[in-house]
Length: 473
Image (cartoon, rainbow, N blue to C red):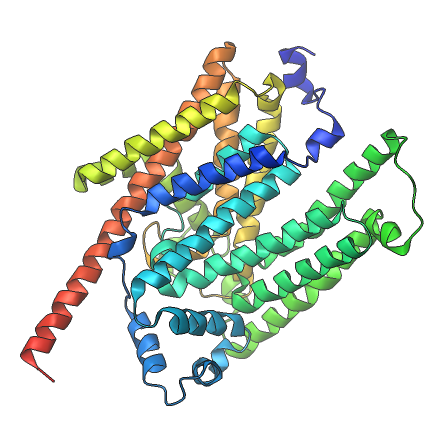
């Protein structure tokens, strides 16, 4: 099938088994190592300089002076009424305190390990759903470097958002793995999915609306696998209860909803009980173009202005400002190293990628998928007014789930633009260059933002030293 036909129809000779692929383990491990390497390089420059900030000191003080230093005693003391639907958050904070005490480096290393796990799980899920290695590694890379949710990297109070997203990924990955499992394996994956779902919601509901997407994904992939089995005459039909449930898309869809909806309802009730849910305010301003008249509550126009404006179309301007105001040699060297690593890896992969895997129609669909996930990523704030929008402030931690959609959209835009070129070489090299530039730009902006957090930590220590010298114990 020639390029024009593929572009027109979006159909290629890719088989169903390739669409729902079980990635080669060696290639998957290689991709994991590459992603881990670039994430490590991106954070090694600033992680030692991070500390505790603002209200974190108060929370740590309460833990350090608690009369009962047992885990249960600390948990009971920190578990206030307004956290009744988030015991996982308290559990996580107490666990970090028991592990690292008042040493901030341990907290930040652990958080970045969780962040890396998110990147790897996101990539593994993309490979299960899309199958296309170059596309999936590009989305994973862009997400890893997006500055949209920078506070989740530096701010202790935002660490819970990363962990909640981890359990969302574990839940979805378990569902996808269970579709090919048999008997006990199927139910084992289902139990893993359910426990991960509960854990995510009890830590932070940031991924709440994304869980509504899981039943649809499972339903679509189940239909694909059934079509594959029909075409595979060697597949033996089984009449066991497990196989009947696993191979029935409608049954799986309702089973998924039965797991998700009760917890969503509990979060809605908890928001009402805590007084953080003001539906009149939320739905009055959700699409209000005059966002400047108020500064809290969900507004999709302002969310898109930050995600696709400041850090989308306006990213080159932000990067230039960061370069002018933060001319660190180590940052430039890190950017050069990352750029070289990413470009060479992508260039190696693009040579082994079929042309139809980069067709414009498919990329436009990817853009649509990205917008859907972006809107769902803010779904938790349809019932909770506690959200604001900022490109660099601590409140951008709320964008950690929506940024998954941003990564998909950006990858789709890059793929669509480069698909317009007639030359195959230009298409492929252009794709690698654009993805590399987005990643390097994200690294520069994140490093610039991190410099303020590092400087704030240094100022705090200077102030504490002055206080100790002025008022010795």
